[in-house]
Structures are given as structure tokens and as C-alpha cells.
Length: 495
Image (cartoon, rainbow, N blue to C red):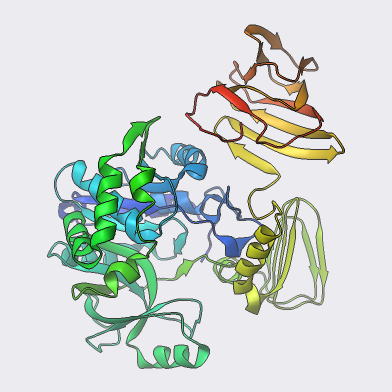
């Protein structure tokens, strides 16, 4: 499967679906994960579903392409990522309804609030629930499976897609069907059991039996049916999700859930909360190459390889290497005589791992967080709704950043208690406000911001603005900000 393929094929295949059912479908895209197993590329503030790893489109954008001919999707995300998600949706002309979770509560509550929103939009739609980080190779096969799933869901079933296992993989959960047909029935089978990730011996047994499928994490059901099942199986969760939605506010174009209510929801997946308990669960086989890109081994499997089964992204020189994955964001990676390695080089961190142990990256990221480091949280280039900033140098009492401001965008009106700032415009024109007075600053010109001075930076032009910021002072943390006004309705967040 070539993950760099253009999205045009994804969109065209959608046109083959029976429009009588599709007219009542609301896509729901879950985009709240952090993707820790794809560190160091995936970070908390810029997770895997937003990465454009080796192509023009991110995994989120490819997911949107699969539902391009349907109603505008509902995207459930968190506060930290909402601006970046909105930007990527805009890039592919997707007019989505965004629901912002105030805290992470797993997939069952996320789908519940999406169901309340789907019902509020009118009727009782069929919900097509997809994570934002899956890749599906055969789009026509996906549409065939979707058609069968919609027919079942229209009769009141809770339907999931099961992928016939190609190998005895221990990284996926499995689903056992009740019919014992070995997946030959394309119209769907009743589910007998959900099972957790097995050991290798058990996975081989599942593979040989023909009655087990990989759990894809994709679902189709009526919004009302899901909520009725949730009310039956998880009354507490239903109550708090209902309260969070009813108390939500529409602000800056997104639906913000009530934190007071949503934070009380049990932190459960849809499998645990609903699918493992209901007697109304069905499976439709998805006969397509499918990847949950949860780790670097899965990324290696999904990517195009050379004659030695190596993946080489970026500036890579590999001699006598085999079955390895190399990615460089800039520096040359030179490798000799290695096998089955993962080497991922970013600006501030390098991952070197045996391909068979990539699941352990998650625990490594946890150690970084425990040690109070920042590499788990964000890249040196930090994305903001107005653009980005990149730390390019620092030392005792000083820090240097490259700031990029998109056309027409502004940073917040703010001040700092402990640092002064010197701005040097590299490209574009800056509109600088200082204590109520404005001035235009052009290329190769500079301006000085004193400690305690109220200031704002705006790009008034039609081209990107780039400037170098030199900070100096006794404390240079991003929390040294007093914000007076902000175009993006952020609260207690770095500029």
C-alpha cells in the first residue's frame, strides 16, 4: 500500500455507493489521540494523525477523503489540537462540525457527544465512526463493506468492520464471529466475543481458525441506537455526556463541551462500554489492506520499500541494510549493515529501535514525561493558530526563536513580567502594537519590546511574515504571559 497516493481515488470511489442509504450518513472522525508509539515524530501537541509523513496529505485528511461525498463530518478533538485540525480540514475544503473535548475520556464518550450532535442536526442519521489515523488500501473494498454495514445498521444493529488477519499479529485486538463461516459471509455476522491483544501462540490459533478478525475500531450505527445502548449499559456515562452536550457552547466556530459534566464521564472505550456487553453487535468483513498506524513497524509495513525492504524517507544513505525504516527531517542518516531497525531523526531527538520492540516506545515516552523533559510534548517548532514558532538557540538568560505569522493573523495582546523581546523582520511586513501605539516594521528592520510593555504582533500582508525574536531576561518560560485579548479565545495558553 502506497500511503503517498493522491486522495483523488479515495473521493472517486465514494461515488459508487448506493445514494439511498448514504444520504442519511453522518461521518464521525475521532481525532483526539496522542500517538505516543510514533514518537519522536508524533508529539502530544502535534500527534500522528496530523503528520504528513511522506506525502502531501495527513492521515486525518485521507480519512476525510474517504467520506468526501457524505454530509459534512463531525470531528471530535481536544483543545490543544483544534486549530491545527481546522487548518488541515480547510486545506481539503472540508466544512466539518468540530466538538472540542475539555479532557480525554476515550472513545465511548466521544462517540456519545457526536451522536447527540448528529441527532440535533435533524433526523436519526447513521453514524460512520472512524479514527483519524487508519489507512485503507482498497477503497472500493471499503465501500462494499460500508454498504453492507449501512444495511445492517439501518435495521438497528451496532456494526463494526473486521479485517481478516493476514498474519498472527499480537498488536491488534480480535473479534470472534458467531456464525463460524470464516468470514465468507460478506453481508455480516453476529459477534460472539471481543478479545484483547493475544500472545503469539494464541494469535496463530486465531489465524488458523478463520473465525477471528482484527478489530478495526470503525463502526456504523444509528445515533439513537448507540445512545439507547449506552443508556442501558453505561447509565452514568450517558448522563454525563448528555449534560456535557446540553451545557455546551458554540464559540469561535466550535462546540465546546461542559468540562464540569464531561470530566465526570468514565474513561472507557466503545468496546469496553458497549460492544463487549451488547447482544446487538455485528461484524462486516473488510477485505482490504488496512493499517492502524500505531507504531513504526506498522508504518514500515504500510510504506513503499526498496529492493532490500528498506523504507528511506528524507536524506538517507543505506549500504547493505535490510528490512529497516529510516526517516530524516534534515540531517543525513548513514547506515551500514543493519537489519530490522527503526531510525527516526528529528530536530531534537533520534529514535533507534529494534523493529520487534516498537511497542515499547510508549513506555519510553512515559519516562520522558516523568523526568520532566519536553520532548514528549512538542516539537521545537510549535504550531499556533496564527502560525508557528521554532526555538533555534538558547543559553543563560537568552533564547532565540524564528516566528512565522500567517497572512492576516495576529498574536494575542500580551505582556511579560520577566523578559524583554527584540524582533527583527526577515521577510514580510509586521504591524507592531506597543502600549497602544502602532508601527509598521519592514524587512531588515527591528523593534524592541520592554519588560511589562503591552504588545501585539500582526501580519497585515498577503504573504507570510517571518521574524527572529531574541528574548532576554531572568525567566523565559512560555507561561510568562498576561493575555489581555486574543482572536482565538484561548485561556491560559502560550501565545
